[in-house]
Image (cartoon, rainbow over all chains, first blue to last red; front, side):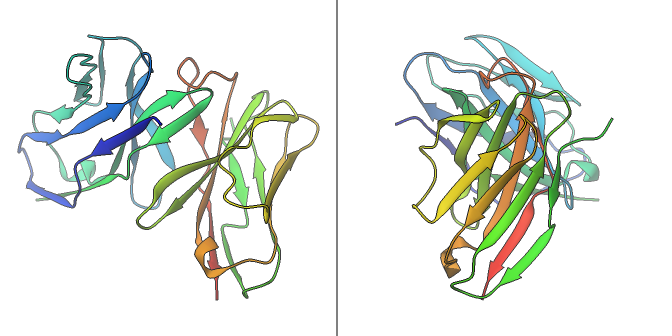
Amino acid sequence: GDSVTQMEGPVTLSEEAFLTINCTYTATGYPSLFWYVQYPGEGLQLLLKATKADDKGSNKGFEATYRKETTSFHLEKGSVQVSDSAVYFCALDRDDKIIFGKGTRLHILP
Amino acid sequence: GAGVSQSPSNKVTEKGKDVELRCDPISGHTALYWYRQSLGQGLEFLIYFQGNSAPDKSGLPSDRFSAERTGGSVSTLTIQRTQQEDSAVYLCASSSEGLAGAYEQYFGPGTRLTVT
């Protein structure tokens, strides 16, 4: 069945470092792809999405490009901040439900 | 406007008891989803409602789990004869339509269930 695999955390970086969180997927057809974020003490919220191959989703300085050839949707940010500390989930949609990866916890040190 | 709300925020119950979890979606949202977030399992889809009907119950882990939605609004997730492996955070989400990719799902804060 469809699935999402993302790098295990925790990932610890210093402020202003470059961030990459890897995500690959297995799916039939061409699902939409998402990154969700869960900040400490808050609910899950959509960070960005891409609905077709080669689309780039972006929000709050984060970017991810839908790569059909490598079945990937890696999350990147050029300069992270302490406020980016959170758990990040890569996901795809299949038949009205969202299939999530297991999440990557990100710690940013000041 | 109000977001998705869930109650209770925390629930501790003894093994074997039944529990009911409640979700109030965003007003006007026709689609409602239940997920479970547990350590080591990530986020698992449980069930999806379009209006009051549930076209996809494939994620319910056992027949001890059931859910209903009335009036196209509030939903309850019921777990009968709870087991320790049911301990998790149960998340509810709603969207203005189905087809997850087309319409953003808005998540509630979750109910943390602990079965002792």
